Structures are given as C-alpha cells and as structure tokens.
Image (cartoon, rainbow, N blue to C red; front, top):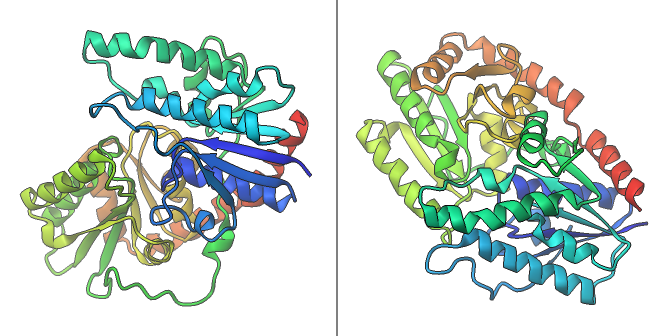
Length: 395
C-alpha cells in the first residue's frame, strides 16, 4: 500500500476536479491510502464522492484571498498552493505527491526530500490568459517562467491528450518528456438500472432536445450553441419542437460565472430562442445523468479544449456528440461515426443538428458506436492500471 497525497487548488465542479477524483478512486481501488488536500472545498458545490466521504478531502488556508482588488488570481492561487505544500511537508506523511494545475509547489515538496512528485498538466496556465497591457505582461513574466521551471522539476509529468502533449512540448523548453494519461470514465455511476426522475426540466413536450454541458465561462463558447439553435429554429419545420438545455458549473464566488449566465440569457432573448432554451446551474449528478440519457445530442462548443470529459460521458450514455473540430474531441469523437466534428460556426453546428433531426435513426447508430468507443479507449479499468503503474514506478 502506498500513501498518496494529492494537492489541488480549488476542489469544485469541473473537468480537472473530476479527473483528480477519478485518480483518487482508481488508487483507492488498488488499496492505496489517498487524501486530497485543497485550499477550498464547498460541500454544496462539489462532486458527490468528496461529500459522502468516499474520497477523503482536507481543506486548508481558505482564509487566504482568491484575488486582490478583483485581480491577481494566478498569484493568489500560487500562494495558496505554496502554503498548502509547506503544511503538508511539515505535518503530513506521504510516499508520493500528485499535483495538478499549479506546479509552483513542486520544489517545496521536493526540497530535502526523497519523495517523488507526479505532476498532471491539464494545459499550460500561461496560455490561458491574455496580456493586453504592459503591466499584465510584467506581472505574468515571472509566473510564466516559474511555471515552466517547476513543471520540469517533477519526477513524472502526465498530460490529458496528445494535443496537450504537443502544446506542453512547444511551450516549456525545460520539459524533456511527458506521457499521456487520458481521463477516464468511472462507468459504475452510469450503470444503475433504475429510472431516473428529474424535476429540474420536463423533456416530454419536445421532439428533439440538445444539451450544452459546460461551466459558465466565456472560453467555453456557449454562445455558439445558442446561435446554432437559432439557425435550427430558422431552418426547421415549425411542427418540429426543438429545445436547447444549457447546463453546467456555476459558482456565485466567480464573477465570470454570474456575468456570463446573464449574458447568455440576454443572447437567447436577442436571438428569439428564449422559449426554446432552458438554463440550469450547478446541476446534481442525478440531473446530469438524466440529461445524458434522454437528450438527442451533446453540443460541445469549446475550441482547442485540452481533452473534454463531457463528450466521453455522453458517448457512454449512447448520445451522439456534435463538437468543434479542434483539441481533445479530435481524439475522442469519431466524425460521422459517433457524432460530428464541425467548424466553429452556427451554420456548421446547426447543420449537424438538423441532420440528427432529419435522420432520427442516427441517434441510435451513433449512440451505440460511441459507447463501444468509450469502452475500448477510455475505460476506468485501463485508466486505473496505467495510473497504478506510474505510481509504483515512482515509489
């Protein structure tokens, strides 16, 4: 048995958080001792495994600011992770550390220690922010340099896709080698046989229901889903009742979530599809599963997404995926077999939606192909074995 300690900056609801929890579950299934340390964990805004005690979570230093004067998010995240790393070094015993998102704590974990550090890079943070002013450029320069340096100090670096591997290699000259560990699907939570009843939304009055499932962030390009829905409404027979459900992570502490939700509601009014659109925020696992099982198709709109677990979840639930033809979906979605890969335009996405409406048999054939693809490439068993081998290699 290996004692594994995870360090994650903010354990809320998102793809990175889902991956960390699945890594913890995988190692627990191999009888390792696992604890996730984080600077923030809200039991009203988290995945169920961290709430019901399946995965042990310890939150420290939430009193440290997340931002200063509405800015300096990256600096604050760095400071919170450094405090977390120092606390762990002083008071927590471990055989191996697994860090993700913020690499700057790596040297603090390795200093005068023989313990190994595995770093999981979802995507270089330095590429996730703009530098529109000289002051922003000046502020980011040391953070960007330290990100590359501290990432390279890890004993093993994992990434979530071949796409991200290529980006990391180009971005961090100090990193000589990284390996791909695809996020997996813990299919057990999708396998319960009982009929799920959902009170959040009624699908019975619609012929076709499309689902957008993302955090309420502008980079997710949810606007595209609304614009594609407007295209469908304009080009589809009035007798066909189509609907779009926009659902995803929503945190009242995050200004962008609040602002973007309002922006999307206003856009639906402007496009005259407000009666064809439902917005849901921070849905429960039960509601999510209901939607994945019962909607016509997933509309996945982020461009250059690092991996994207939602298309994998959708395919496992026999739902076709309409995704933008860049980033992770190029590795997960097989065009014209498990769904459609489209240029990021309302017309192209809308045409794919119309094809599923006009050829309704595609939902079943693509759904079956999608589930088979997930079982072959992204199973939890394969993920567990590969992660376990990486951990044992370092211990």
